[in-house]
Image (tube, rainbow, N blue to C red; front, side):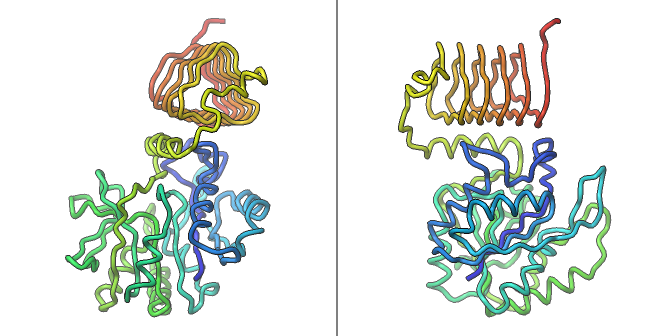
Length: 359
């Protein structure tokens, strides 16, 4: 079985954080999103598994990192999705279905597993893979119940879990069962699956539109193919929006075993002075914390300087300096400087500078 990971997109909903790095490189709970994903996959797929990354935006950055860190476990393959055009030097692409079409010559007649990098199960993909091998169907789709189905593709199914209708981001309520970032495609339908995508690919797109997988899957259902749901009862983290990054950070931090809950090692090194750490918190390399209260649910990046700060439920990027900041539920990008600010829900991108003090 192949793993196919489309990772070409810009991540518009996560701007300004994706101006300087790909979406999969956002750092949550001490690791990049792509690291969290590939660690989960190791629980279910053996060493030597073939994995195809469909890259585009900042593709060289992605491929270099993955080759350096994962070529000892996975057989890595890369193919590039070309952009439709550019908007202020930012590329835009023709959609998920066109990205998946690029996998055709790799997976050929094998089963394949499409996995999206911005959705992460809190456990792993065991239930989905077991269901795939124990049951007879053509496509298996991961779903979960969500509170805001208008952000997702959603499905309607019968009592046996057979999908009868799949709709992309419905404007009116259809179902709260949302497609959750993973599809298993049986080789019984791989040929017709790619043929349908190819036909859709040849249809010109209006401005701002994309070729999605949902109409392809609906056509397969209409043809009588068996498309079933794998309903996840464990939480699936959605990293597609800034507010969901904070929620995902909270979940992932709760999984971390605090080997040094009092952070005595930071004190011994002199990197924490007159400060209180309230777990769960993860603190990057060479971080320096002075006269501050940090936590709970805070991710502090590498080479960060915090002085006279009170922070909770916050993600602080690498190489960032905060002085006299009181905040919660905030996202602060890499290489940023903030000073003299009391504010919740701060969302600023990389290399930002904010100060309210008078000079």
